[in-house]
Length: 334
Image (cartoon, rainbow, N blue to C red):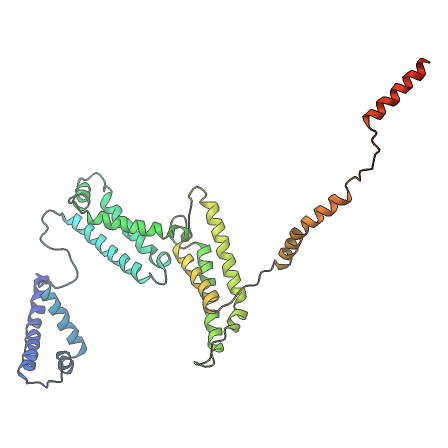
């Protein structure tokens, strides 16, 4: 058996090295070596770097149960078929890679642009477990064994965690329709973001004169203003397009990579550098404000000038009017 031969050879190499480690520890305990030297220091003196790494790996392998070689599933699983065991191992490897990518890309947030291929890989491995392969009943048995055999359902929990994380990050808004690659707008935005940060960095180096003096960020504000305005305008356009495309879904966001990049840029621009972008519509705003303030004055003046002046009219008393009419009647009767 070739595997057995390799295992015996590695065991034969392991025994003298472990005895050497034991002798080194006993020498330290009995005072053979100097008290100021540590076990790792003595090992570094007697062994090469490669031999030291081999000793550590083999020692860890023995402490973990004596299993040598790459990571594998426990051998005492009689209820799993070889096909099911291979599916579970594939899902474990892909899940491990995706988890590491998510953690490494957590700050600053680079989840969608870095881990989308690994997420697709995990989704494909999960599909291999759940779907039926042809007309064979083994695939159904694998699905029952790996997904529904116990109360915890670890594989299902992990798959749901990855899906929920991907949905909360809105990574679909950074990718194409088939999620095969980053969209053109996302690539363009990230390139502008990198150019803006490069502009900040280049102009910061020339504006720092002394550690004791306050930093002067006027060069950053002046030379990087156009790049910042272009990036901010592009972000606003992407937000509007996203709202138009997702009218039925309320509260939709851009992908977390784009949002985090814009937040970082705005914090640097406003808080760190204390820069501001002047409003280009200042004159129209002032004109409209003055017009609104003078509206009451114009209203009262116009109402006063166009109102009709009432003329004074002589009103006769009712008694006098009745007496004169009676006198007229008497004259007509005579």
